[in-house]
Length: 173
Image (cartoon, rainbow, N blue to C red):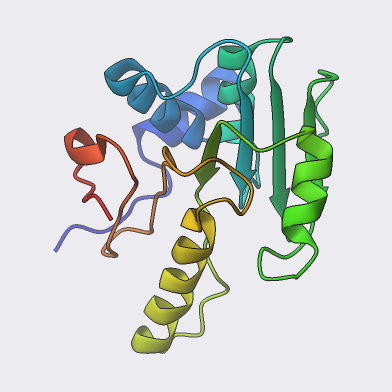
């Protein structure tokens, strides 16, 4: 069985090129294959730490767009761009959607999520926690329009999103 290597070529590339994480390149792959984001869009990133997806999304939507992320962990380096904002908070908290919507100014055009729960080591429980986060990210109307929601799960877990992720080995909903 293949194991996840934290120091894989994308991690090394991120270190070499100064991007926030390997996720920058994963979103870039999705963008090239499926044009997930476009100029001027509003993007919510659920589980945004360390900010790789936010960094790439900011470059794709530009200053006419808006990128807002939320995570339990605060980003180590805040974004300088005025149209990019990272919030600290729990995806399960009742006020999360309202905080995101306020920061976005309206519903997101695209919701990204690479969120992962704190693992307990109990396989069934960890998978259930992860599925709950995935379902939370995909709730129609929570912070975005029903539609595109790229969602990535940890290796060995079910991965899904609402559009064209098949080229990445993801399965739709």
